[in-house]
Length: 572
Image (cartoon, rainbow, N blue to C red; front, side):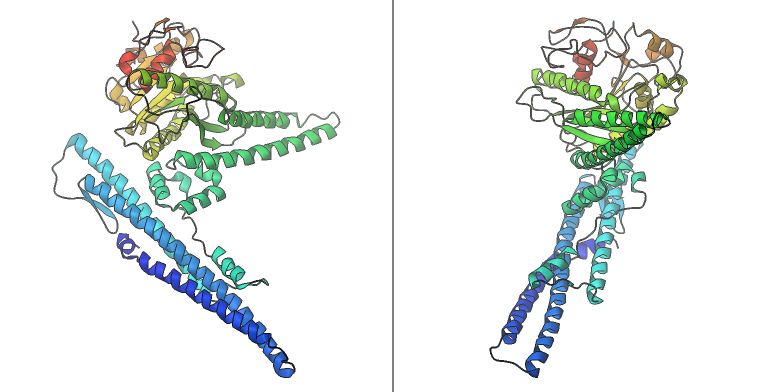
């Protein structure tokens, strides 16, 4: 099957077929009513009446089976018409996007230039990137078309073979509805879907009819919720389903372990497992709590809902990412990557800091002509951070965990770029890395995240395996470094080249962490410890507002996110 088959599909003929099948069902109802009337003829008795009664019952059963088959065929034609119509619309949009880029989509599919072009260097690279994205979308449409065709063939074979029957005792309408229920199109899946690129998943997901998306979410929440390339709202719904199920499961396991422990009469072999389960449950409850937080600027703020973009249960190493504000609708989006000793239990603190950064950013936008531009801030615990508390400090000195996390982070940021309602030029995506997280963020940029990331801020950084913006895939002036002079151990690691060359010798723009009055005429505290960069000054009041502003470092993060880098305070 190729794109020509999609063009040739006739949805009008399918709609006519639905009407004819429904008309045929109306005839079956009339025939059944007539039989019942004849069977109820007053005074008809004897062998003829008995034989007629048996014959009527047989015909009635046959009519029920026919009603079920008609229901299946009618529903199949209806759903196929809808799915094909959406497929044709997606193909028309794809061709329009190709035309805008001076390209054409052709069977089987392939993407060609609309006319001969003489491009070189960066322009040629960009055109090849566009061609690849268009080709991925075209292939996804073919996958969807093949699945529709296969589903249709499967149901039709069952109808022809007489396998769709109504075995219950009920009305013809119930038989018809029974047939309809067994004729739904299935959502197409690919082998190893979790290994597909964000571009492939984005194209596949966009091609699915809404009903099939909801079916996939309901049947495979753990898969859909973690597929980079699926939109934020769908991931959130899927991951909340998975979170609720996992929480319930772990609570039950913990209760069973508690009972076994009590019954062990002084035997403590279960103590370790109990502790692990309690720690896992603490992490799950922390995610639940983070999702229920109030991150609004004030009561008029309607865009501060939390979205669960990643949820991968794995005991103590459970991974989660929570966005404050819908990243698909936001003009300005940030992703913050944490450092050592961060686990699922930390998601509450990180999400609170994300909410404060969003408030501070909205304040800057409102004061500088950007009122109405939406902001989303993501707290990303999507990798296993070094756990120096468990007696493994060498993990923080190596790059193994950073490299492992960088691949996931690169796909995650590409997903945010692909699913955004804004164009690549309109969306402003910032990647923030704190401590060891800056090392992970840098490797992600070098591994493909730079395709959609516009700016990056490394703070409290021990090193990033790069000393120029171009090595990160960014233009000069879009990479920032913010290390406080009193962050001694981190600065020592940076100076010793633990993670590449000293970032202080890079071409990154260095931002201040010192106490001062910022461009918005607010006096702000400086950084006193490694964990304070993104935190508010006080423990009281709403963080990120005038009553409890962020520190100078937090204000700098907000200025970069708002797209107002000239407001950020430079280091002296």
